[in-house]
Image 1 (cartoon, rainbow, N blue to C red):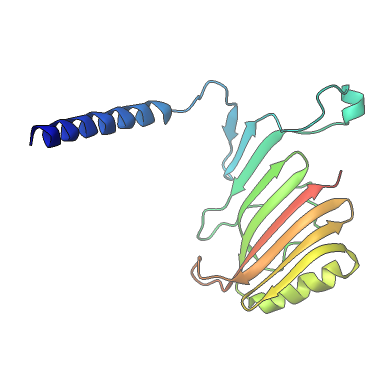
Image 2: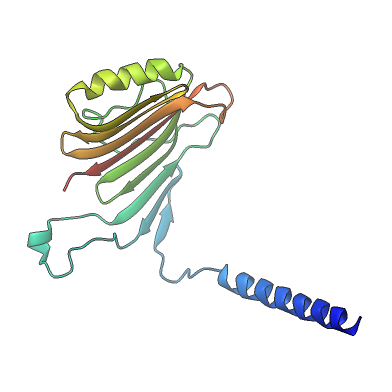
Length: 181
């Protein structure tokens, strides 16, 4: 009985110590962040983009914007906005999509959106758009379509499928574009 009591006390102290450590770590380091948010829900954070350009001069590296920009819609009525420099002429967003979020970093974009149209209509739109792209992999599944490849100087990852994540919308759309190296 004394051994069980000692184990219980030891376990309780161990749990308390772990809780204290996690609560101390969860505060985060707010001193190294440079954030600004405007009224449209855009969050900008200066961050060093990971790369392998250690010993190259700025001219050899080319210019690279490592500012992280996040634009988030309100989730109900106000859609997030695509940045002005988003390549809509190369990889347009499906018509009448509600943009949940846009992340921009180092010339790349990640767009999450929803559509009221069935995912098969969305997939057909992008299959037509990507007919001249260099497709690396394409997957047609029962309730989704995914495509990876290169198009006009970008590496892309596209996915659409049935979704009930947002009321009134039938499909999700995810687009990732990164400048090709």
